[in-house]
Length: 246
Image (cartoon, rainbow, N blue to C red; front, top):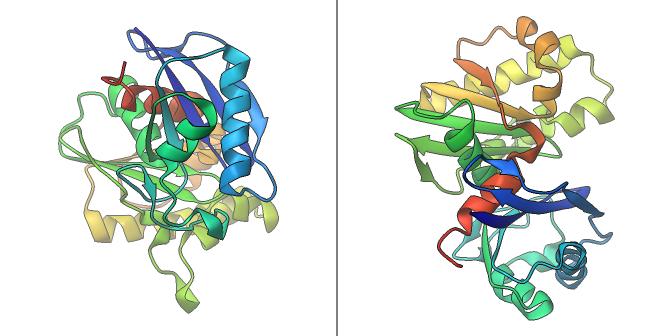
């Protein structure tokens, strides 16, 4: 079975058909730049451009970078302020013509990792973390998703969310060494450990690309594994979310 997944990110919107039997992309992914400013209308047109590239007419799953409740954007997060309370699935359908299932982007990546990656058949409380523009998180108990668990918005000092301290974008903007970034990630992972006591934390995004160098520098007691689905996780999980719509 092939379904279509889209991963909406801060710098790019990526999509491809996915073979759910294998958890692999059924065609090379296509990427369009995230518009600036990333207003609802501009983003909807970018999604249409992506779907037109594949001439895809069926249902579409979308991983979207904010809290999503029944297809509605509930928080600005790193988005344009005009997104708050927009019914995302209806906007995209009006622009593109397809039926859409929209979920949180980190939840989508987590779905892929739990089905095809390091979380497969792992019991208990599993947290998947994506380190990118912000810090996304998906939380699963005995394989079942607990949606919109925004651990990147845990408070850091001066009322800032912890993603403003430890995300991959912060590493880049502040030119942190891996040692310096590891110290910040230790703070975040220890924080998650105190809040959730997870059995496993699966780490994806920017950290997964440097895992061989980064992991030996981490001192947290939290049980960590690197994500196995890597950059395709968001697309794969979004396609999984659309299952049952066809």
